[in-house]
Image (cartoon, rainbow, N blue to C red; front, side):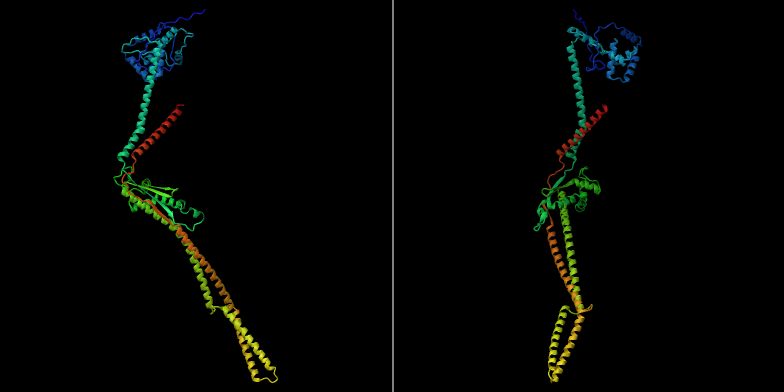
Length: 544
C-alpha cells in the first residue's frame, strides 16, 4: 500500500511593483523549485563581501554604472536576477545581481547557469494543498525587486488564482499600452504624411488658387450633299464617318503649337497668363518660352471628339470670362480656316489634274487643225481629191468626143468622093481632141506622181483630217472629265457648323475645391499605403 506524499507548506513572497527592473515576461518559462530552502551559506559570503567593501557607496555606484554601460537587455538582466536567487543572493536590482554574481566568480550569462534554472516539477502531486505549496515555493523563487532607499512594504499572502488574475491584468495593461502607443504612432504618421499635405492642398484650393472661368462650345464638320454618289462612299455620305478624318485633323490642329502661336499673335495668350493676379502655380513666368506656354495651353484648352455623333467639344479656361470667350471664338475661326484649307487643297488638286488634261487635249487638237490647214495651203487647193476626180471626168469626156470625131472622119473617108472641107474639118477636130487629151493626161500624171503630187497631198490631208477627228474626240472626253471632276469637288466641300456658340460664363468653374481636396487626400493616402506596404515587406524580408 502506497502512501501519498505529504504536502509541504510554502510562503508566497509578494513581488514589489515599484522595483527598478521590469518583472519577468509572463510568456517565458519560470524557474520552479519544489525543495525547501536551505541555509544560505553563499548569501553569508555575499554579505561578508558587501561588508568587506569600503563604507562609502562610490565604488558600488561606479561598478553599477560600469555594468549599465555594458548594454545588457532586459532578458539578460532578468536572467541574472534569477541566477542570483538561485544562489540564495538578495540583490537590490538587476545590475546589483550582476555585480554580486561577478564578485562570487559566477558568470550569469553562461549557458550552464541558464540551464540550471530549469527544474522539473515533482511528479504525481495530486493533493491540492501540495500543488498550492509547490506554486507558492516556486513563486518565492521568482526574481524580486528590493527597494534601496525606502522601506520594503509588508508582504501579503495571495492565492494562486489571485496571483494569476493579477498577472493577467498586468499583461492586459501592457498590451493595451502597446496598442495605444502603436495607434498614437500610426495617427502621427497619418497626420504628417496624409492629413497635413491634404490640409495644405485644401488651403491652396480654398484660399490661394485663382478662380478660372470655362467657356464651352460645340461644332461639327459637315459634307455637301452627294446625290450622284455610289458604292461605299454613297453609303457613308451624310454620316459622321464621312468626316471623321477631317474632325480628327481639326482636333489635332486646335491642340497644336501652331494654334498656340497664332492665338498668342491675335489675342495675346502669353500676356494673359503672365498677369500678377494669377496665383504662382497657374501663372506663367515673365517672357515664357513656347514650351512653357504650350504646357499651360494644353491644360486650359481641351478639345474632345465624339465619334458616335461626330461632334467636336471644346472647353477654354481663362482667368477672365470675356477673355475665355474671345479665346474660344478665335479657335473656332482657326478651325474653320483649317477645314476650308483641307477641302480646298483636295478639290484644287483634282481640278488641276482635270484642267491640265483638258488643256493638253485642246493643244493637240489645235496642232492637228493647223497641220491640216498648212497641207491645204501647200497644195494650193482645199480638196486635191476633187481635182483628181475632175481631171478624170474631163479625160473621159475628151476620149468620148475623140472617139465620136474619129468615127465621123472614117465615115467621110468611106465615100468615093468625100467632101474635102468636111474631111478637113473632121481631121482638125480629131487633132485638137488628141492635143487636149494629151494635156489632160499630163496634168493627171503630175497630180498622181511625185512628192508634191495631188495624190500624195490628198493622202496627207486625209491623215490630218483623221488626226483632227481623233483630237476632237479626246478634247470632248477631257471636257466631260473636267466637268465631272468639278461636280465631284463640289460634293467634297466641308462645312464647319457651330451647334453651341461660346458664351462668357458668370461664375468660376475652377478650381473645384472640395473635389480636388478629396482627390488630394486619396492620392496621399495611396502613396502612404504603397510606401508602408513596401517598407513592411522589405522589413520582413530583411528579418527573415
